[in-house]
Image 1: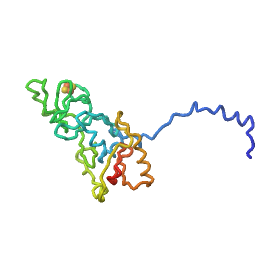
Image 2: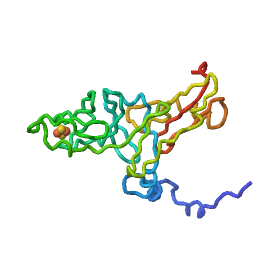
Image 3: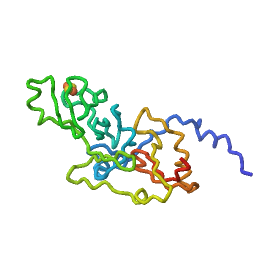
Image 4: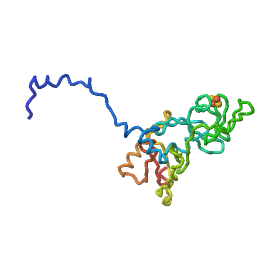
Length: 231
Ligand code: FES
């Protein structure tokens, strides 16, 4: 049995509260991934899973990736688009943009942008906007595969091919791909907390499902290939 502490020893510990603890800190060199940061530049050489394909719809959605707030949408032709959220004209948010066949129309003066940011119409400008060909809303390339929208935020001349994953190319008989969001950190309005449970099970190898996690520290998406009967 250990000897009880003496009164001077107890007093030397102070009152023991957490008050006065130094503030927590992190290593910005490692954890900052926004534009013009070392890790941000490194990660901007790869494709990243951004959202479920079903998240890209005719209702513009706010998304956040690599420290950037962006607008994800799908135009009337079915093409996903990822644009800088503030209209290049007068800075109105494109979150309230109107989706049309050829792109997204800003709700203020009606400029129409396609999924690559090209300005197609400037209806309030003289002659329909004689300089619209030189106007471009900042945008990022996106591609869809396996039910996921992938985004590339790096320099265009260094853009790699979107990788293919053999695990999803060579499904066994009776398997299909099921993709869902595992944490909901990219959207403020997306809650799928309950679905983290199978994710944790899979990590410990307790289910027959095949699983990969995509961009686990950026956008926690989980992809399973699993027997159809289990869906
Ligand atoms: S602010 Fe978008 S068109 Fe004017």
